[in-house]
Image (cartoon, rainbow, N blue to C red; front, side):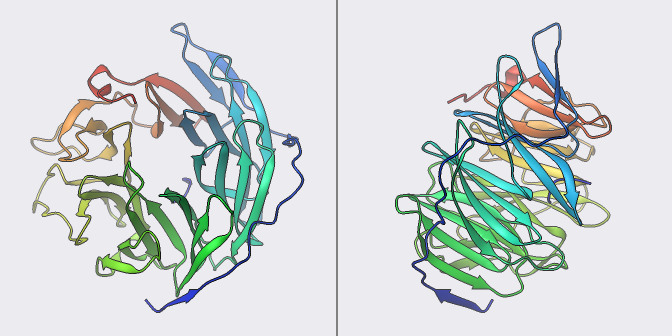
Length: 360
């Protein structure tokens, strides 16, 4: 198990967050990660099955399930000490975390629970709850939500809803209903100007769309794409949108044109810099000024499974030394986070020297 992976009606609403009294984050009973340090000073955490990691300037955050409710993981969110690896702040999310983003002093997260898709606003240091709102009821099977900051607003998606929320007033500005949508992935460029949306139905029919960052109006779209679990957005860089998807027998990483949403030209056999075949678990991420690819398929003239690359061209720069049973789950400025789901371990690994091109 892995962590998840057009009739549109415009509704303007004046409902804001439900604000709650600020209180301390509560620690849930049960699983607590164990921490060890290697001889070279790198940290490892045990007890992290199906983990989610966010390495940010405001802190290192980890998410792990402590129990289940039906088919939904009940996740625990922790802010970890970069020095000791211990949990410094913790709270139960009462659902499964889908996505998270930092803005100012707040950590925004989207969770899915049997009661629906929820947007939570947390203090980035204490993880105390500052506000929450119900985004949408869940579809069957459970939907997957996403969120991204574009300009001075937060776009959040879940169920069949796509919302734009003001970061100053915490009120929804726009609410779009996208019929049949269930799984979402939102992305923007490093400057936070573009809004790119991947939405798919429960049977995996997906579209990648460029939308107006103020109104959500559709500007460009791919035709319907047949996938397993939808199209995952790795990020936007320059005039390209990096995506990954599973196709049943195999998966692929592709670079779509941002303005037109046209796909790349793929080779009949083998890989190109912008069209890389791989396993169904192949993934891509734009982070710290580079492109990171995990799970590519070896081919003639293509000796790399896992690598960092130029985010504009996709040209590989350096290989990542990741063992066959491990997965790259997060990228920091100087550290990679590698998960072994067989043992439930998350480990820090240094970023290869060839990938240390932009640490801002």
